Length: 86
Image (tube, rainbow, N blue to C red; front, side, top):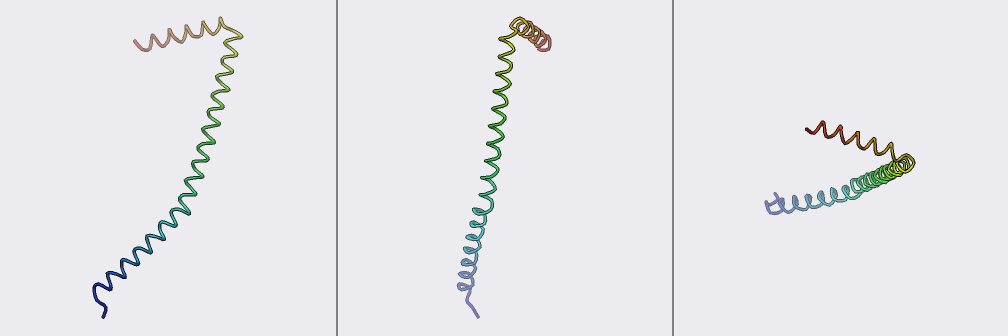
């Protein structure tokens, strides 16, 4: 019959091996998934920023081409916001 110390030592060794296996799996599988998700998120953010820049450039071009319409639109939007805020 094995002693309690021997059983306890075996259990600690098995837990240590299990912990190492879980750590290895986490690094190999989850780490790769997180890296891929971060890469995809970065690409989406870059595309969104590029789209926002394009829209801002287009709007700037329209304001330069038609400044009177831009001023009238800004006044109208300001008036409406002022009415809603009250």
